[in-house]
Length: 89
Image 1 (cartoon, rainbow, N blue to C red):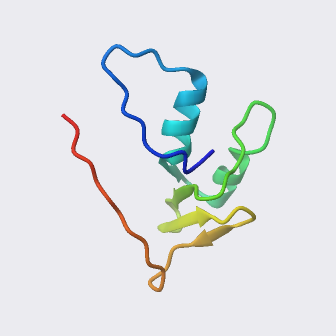
Image 2 (image 1 turned 135 degrees about the horizontal axis):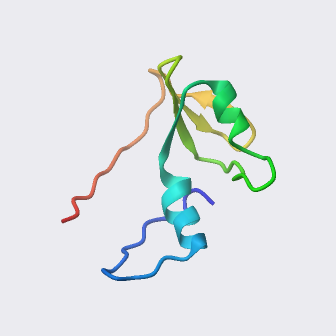
């Protein structure tokens, strides 16, 4: 599920599949060549499902989109969002 928050993994920790899917996969900006490639990546047997808040970049359209829970919507000039960063090291 997207929006699970942040988790600090310790050195040597063994990650479960659920942790990888929840904290890493669902909270990344996915990059796809086209919307067709994006749509083909979800919903089939053994493929991930969409969840609200997911973000993707479509290379052929040079566009950034977010999933509303029912559809993909473009992030445009009128959208406001806050980006935060954390330095690890």
